[in-house]
Image (cartoon, rainbow, N blue to C red; front, side, top):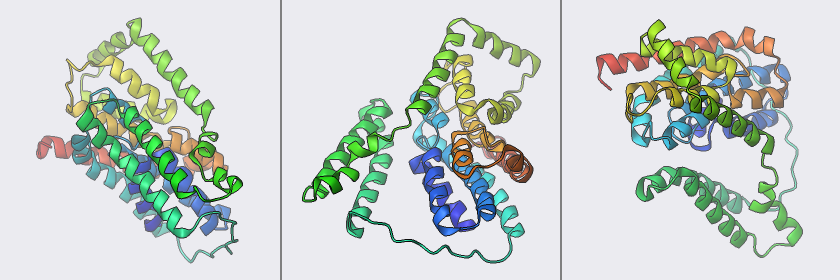
Length: 325
């Protein structure tokens, strides 16, 4: 339980929480034959992936949006949110690990037909992770948008894989190429996020988001409470539109780059989506892959996610007000 959670937590900071969830759940299918046991692990993966994605500028769509919008910087978001995110992951993992007893029966692994050697697979994996880690460095030194770094990394990956597999038969090389991977792009999800961002931009252009921000300030007043409410709402509405709305509601003149509000928003929106299975892209992916029932997740996992979310938020606020971090 701790091994799966820890790997998910740190891997999601590099690969992003959606990709990590897909990878780890696919791995669980090979390790755990029992679907009932696998559901609990999948619930933990959702919490761990969202917590891990919250402290990295490339770990979650919402933190990436804040990073691109110049609301946060790479080093600052890591320093301010890594410990609260770690608490958000560790407490639910500890509770689940005390409830799980016995041993997991290993599934008899079937040998898959592979067209690459172990050395080639390790090389491609290392190159791929290095390209992802290079994106913040690329943005820092070139001051170009992060997507330029991703496209550059993709081009480099394409070139190197073509060189690695150049001596193979076309039928084998085709399955290992970047061109083959590009055919599997989840276009409906891309269009879904595009539609959300266009809708939010329309609300911003008409002044509705500004009016909403003013109404929240008048009725609540405390920015910490407002941010925590946004985190809870992200479990229902999805965190992407809420962060996009917050970016339209509050300007950089009001809250400059690396302000407490933006950092706390990155944590709350990233981890708050774990409360419901539909609250994050990672949760939706796990639900589809393992056929997780909404009611089952609400009964077994949601309360753990709430405890982790509140504990991490408490640690974040203590850091800010007591340690001036």
